[in-house]
Length: 172
Ligand code: NI
Image (cartoon, rainbow, N blue to C red; front, side):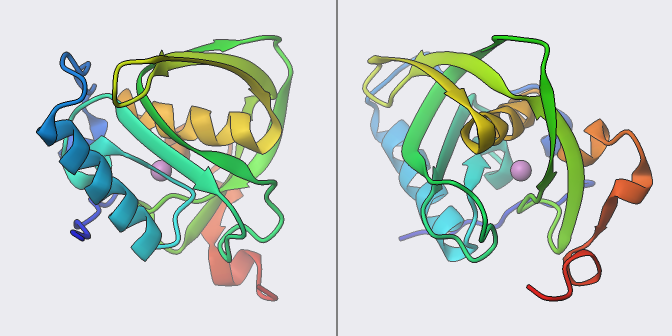
Protein backbone atom coordinates (compact mmCIF):
# COMPACT_ATOMS: atom_id res chain seq x y z
CA UNK A 1 0.00 0.00 0.00
CA UNK A 2 1.45 3.30 -1.06
CA UNK A 3 -0.45 6.40 -0.19
CA UNK A 4 1.03 9.14 -2.34
CA UNK A 5 1.21 12.83 -1.59
CA UNK A 6 -1.60 14.70 -3.33
CA UNK A 7 -0.48 17.86 -5.13
CA UNK A 8 -2.31 20.99 -4.06
CA UNK A 9 -3.69 23.85 -6.10
CA UNK A 10 -0.77 26.04 -7.11
CA UNK A 11 1.48 23.15 -8.11
CA UNK A 12 2.28 23.62 -11.83
CA UNK A 13 1.85 19.88 -12.53
CA UNK A 14 -1.89 20.24 -11.90
CA UNK A 15 -2.23 22.71 -14.79
CA UNK A 16 -0.59 20.53 -17.44
CA UNK A 17 -2.42 18.57 -20.11
CA UNK A 18 -1.81 14.90 -19.31
CA UNK A 19 -0.47 12.42 -21.88
CA UNK A 20 -2.51 9.51 -23.26
CA UNK A 21 -1.73 6.01 -21.97
CA UNK A 22 -0.12 4.06 -24.81
CA UNK A 23 0.36 0.61 -23.22
CA UNK A 24 -2.27 -1.26 -21.21
CA UNK A 25 -1.91 -4.09 -18.69
CA UNK A 26 1.64 -3.10 -17.74
CA UNK A 27 3.20 -3.33 -14.26
CA UNK A 28 3.64 0.47 -14.25
CA UNK A 29 -0.04 1.06 -14.99
CA UNK A 30 -1.13 -1.50 -12.36
CA UNK A 31 1.10 0.13 -9.75
CA UNK A 32 -0.20 3.59 -10.61
CA UNK A 33 -3.80 2.45 -10.19
CA UNK A 34 -3.13 0.72 -6.85
CA UNK A 35 -1.42 3.87 -5.58
CA UNK A 36 -4.35 5.98 -6.76
CA UNK A 37 -6.90 3.79 -4.94
CA UNK A 38 -4.78 3.69 -1.78
CA UNK A 39 -4.43 7.47 -1.84
CA UNK A 40 -8.11 8.10 -2.55
CA UNK A 41 -9.21 5.72 0.20
CA UNK A 42 -6.84 7.24 2.77
CA UNK A 43 -8.34 10.68 2.14
CA UNK A 44 -12.00 9.63 1.70
CA UNK A 45 -12.05 10.96 -1.84
CA UNK A 46 -14.78 10.27 -4.41
CA UNK A 47 -12.31 10.33 -7.27
CA UNK A 48 -8.72 10.95 -8.20
CA UNK A 49 -6.82 11.76 -11.37
CA UNK A 50 -3.24 10.59 -11.95
CA UNK A 51 -1.86 14.15 -12.24
CA UNK A 52 -2.94 14.75 -8.64
CA UNK A 53 -0.23 12.33 -7.51
CA UNK A 54 2.26 13.78 -9.95
CA UNK A 55 1.77 11.36 -12.86
CA UNK A 56 0.83 13.26 -16.00
CA UNK A 57 -1.16 10.49 -17.69
CA UNK A 58 -4.80 10.27 -18.70
CA UNK A 59 -6.00 7.95 -15.93
CA UNK A 60 -8.85 8.68 -13.51
CA UNK A 61 -10.56 6.60 -10.87
CA UNK A 62 -13.77 7.20 -8.98
CA UNK A 63 -16.15 5.40 -6.65
CA UNK A 64 -18.88 6.65 -4.37
CA UNK A 65 -20.29 4.39 -1.70
CA UNK A 66 -21.25 5.83 1.64
CA UNK A 67 -18.79 8.72 1.80
CA UNK A 68 -18.65 11.00 4.85
CA UNK A 69 -17.41 13.84 2.64
CA UNK A 70 -20.49 13.50 0.37
CA UNK A 71 -23.36 12.41 2.66
CA UNK A 72 -26.07 13.10 0.07
CA UNK A 73 -24.35 11.68 -2.99
CA UNK A 74 -25.89 8.81 -4.92
CA UNK A 75 -23.60 5.76 -5.31
CA UNK A 76 -21.26 5.55 -8.30
CA UNK A 77 -19.68 2.21 -9.27
CA UNK A 78 -15.94 1.80 -8.84
CA UNK A 79 -14.42 2.79 -12.17
CA UNK A 80 -10.95 3.02 -13.65
CA UNK A 81 -11.14 5.12 -16.79
CA UNK A 82 -8.19 5.59 -19.15
CA UNK A 83 -7.92 7.99 -22.10
CA UNK A 84 -11.50 9.18 -21.52
CA UNK A 85 -13.65 11.05 -24.01
CA UNK A 86 -16.75 12.90 -22.77
CA UNK A 87 -19.74 13.78 -24.89
CA UNK A 88 -22.55 15.85 -23.32
CA UNK A 89 -25.99 14.58 -24.38
CA UNK A 90 -27.77 17.89 -23.96
CA UNK A 91 -27.00 21.50 -23.11
CA UNK A 92 -28.69 21.17 -19.71
CA UNK A 93 -26.50 21.86 -16.72
CA UNK A 94 -26.90 21.57 -12.96
CA UNK A 95 -25.19 23.35 -10.12
CA UNK A 96 -23.65 21.21 -7.39
CA UNK A 97 -21.14 21.56 -4.59
CA UNK A 98 -17.77 19.99 -5.37
CA UNK A 99 -14.66 19.35 -3.39
CA UNK A 100 -11.25 18.22 -4.51
CA UNK A 101 -8.36 16.54 -2.70
CA UNK A 102 -6.08 19.13 -4.34
CA UNK A 103 -8.14 21.95 -2.79
CA UNK A 104 -8.43 20.64 0.78
CA UNK A 105 -11.05 22.03 3.13
CA UNK A 106 -13.01 23.89 0.46
CA UNK A 107 -16.14 23.47 -1.64
CA UNK A 108 -17.39 25.32 -4.68
CA UNK A 109 -20.69 25.45 -6.54
CA UNK A 110 -19.95 24.28 -10.07
CA UNK A 111 -22.16 24.01 -13.14
CA UNK A 112 -21.84 20.67 -14.98
CA UNK A 113 -23.65 18.86 -17.79
CA UNK A 114 -26.54 16.80 -16.43
CA UNK A 115 -26.20 13.91 -18.81
CA UNK A 116 -23.30 12.61 -20.84
CA UNK A 117 -21.77 9.64 -22.55
CA UNK A 118 -18.23 8.69 -21.71
CA UNK A 119 -15.93 6.30 -23.46
CA UNK A 120 -12.43 5.12 -22.70
CA UNK A 121 -10.58 2.00 -21.63
CA UNK A 122 -10.11 -0.12 -18.55
CA UNK A 123 -6.60 -1.11 -17.36
CA UNK A 124 -6.56 -4.17 -19.66
CA UNK A 125 -7.44 -2.04 -22.67
CA UNK A 126 -11.08 -3.17 -22.89
CA UNK A 127 -13.45 -0.43 -24.01
CA UNK A 128 -15.80 1.34 -21.60
CA UNK A 129 -18.92 3.07 -22.93
CA UNK A 130 -21.47 4.49 -20.49
CA UNK A 131 -24.31 6.96 -20.48
CA UNK A 132 -24.72 8.59 -17.08
CA UNK A 133 -26.41 11.50 -15.34
CA UNK A 134 -26.52 13.31 -12.03
CA UNK A 135 -23.69 12.86 -9.55
CA UNK A 136 -22.01 10.18 -11.66
CA UNK A 137 -21.85 12.63 -14.59
CA UNK A 138 -20.53 15.34 -12.27
CA UNK A 139 -17.74 13.16 -10.87
CA UNK A 140 -16.59 12.14 -14.37
CA UNK A 141 -16.49 15.76 -15.53
CA UNK A 142 -14.55 16.84 -12.45
CA UNK A 143 -11.96 14.05 -12.74
CA UNK A 144 -11.50 14.38 -16.49
CA UNK A 145 -10.99 18.15 -16.10
CA UNK A 146 -7.85 17.28 -14.11
CA UNK A 147 -6.43 15.63 -17.25
CA UNK A 148 -6.70 18.95 -19.07
CA UNK A 149 -5.18 20.95 -16.22
CA UNK A 150 -8.49 22.32 -14.95
CA UNK A 151 -9.35 22.54 -11.25
CA UNK A 152 -12.98 23.19 -10.27
CA UNK A 153 -12.30 26.72 -8.90
CA UNK A 154 -11.36 27.66 -12.49
CA UNK A 155 -14.97 26.89 -13.48
CA UNK A 156 -16.66 29.05 -10.85
CA UNK A 157 -18.80 31.87 -12.20
CA UNK A 158 -18.51 33.81 -8.94
CA UNK A 159 -15.64 33.51 -6.47
CA UNK A 160 -18.20 33.87 -3.64
CA UNK A 161 -19.39 30.39 -4.56
CA UNK A 162 -16.08 29.05 -3.21
CA UNK A 163 -15.72 28.63 0.54
CA UNK A 164 -14.38 26.63 3.41
CA UNK A 165 -16.36 23.50 4.29
CA UNK A 166 -16.84 24.42 7.93
CA UNK A 167 -18.17 27.87 6.98
CA UNK A 168 -20.47 26.65 4.19
CA UNK A 169 -21.78 23.55 5.97
CA UNK A 170 -21.38 24.13 9.73
CA UNK A 171 -23.69 21.20 10.57
CA UNK A 172 -21.67 18.53 8.73
NI1 NI B 1 -10.34 16.98 -7.99
